[in-house]
Image (cartoon, rainbow, N blue to C red):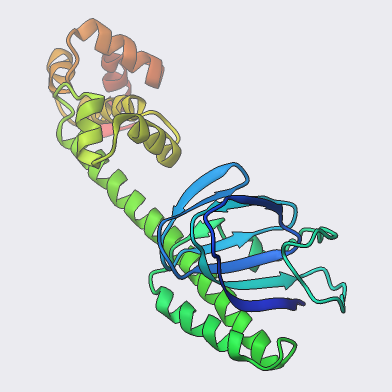
Length: 272
């Protein structure tokens, strides 16, 4: 990644006034204090020590509260500028990059071990020349660590999501004969109900009750072709209130009634 390090320094504000500005280049700062109100592109955050703030050119930023941060500003446009850089002086806004390492970073993140980043920022600030290979190596390491944090968060989200889905689907499978409510499933997932519905649909591609219906009918099909249970008993064992409704749902799903399915599958004790 070709880049110019425009600034790397410690900064502490003296006042609490919120000031707005337009971001000119890429900024990757880390907070050294707590309880600052931060607004970035109309989203508001309450910052804490160790939060990393990533800003892109053309964005609007404002903050309220005493600030103590390590600042890092990068130019990824390959345009060299000999003028001393200042964030607060209006100037040309750099073009956005399609670099994957920068684009993958969220606006605000809290690394698992911010102390490692504090150490890297402190080393960078003490580097005699920001154009040196040592300074660039430190910036590369900061960006690498931040991307590793993003990858870890994504992995944990997917892992936890898979665990939750497995738990909910297992619960459904164990209670196919019972009346199951959304509140009940949300409690199994340990999610608020509206969030659970969105989560389940995103993970499975269908709403919870549609999945439950599919599971019941799949189980019904197994019982129809592998047992001699009466159709009414199959229906009641899977929570259907009436046999007629079960037969109707079964035909919609498989194209045949349960009885026709059973007669068509078996012939002289063997599968056709």
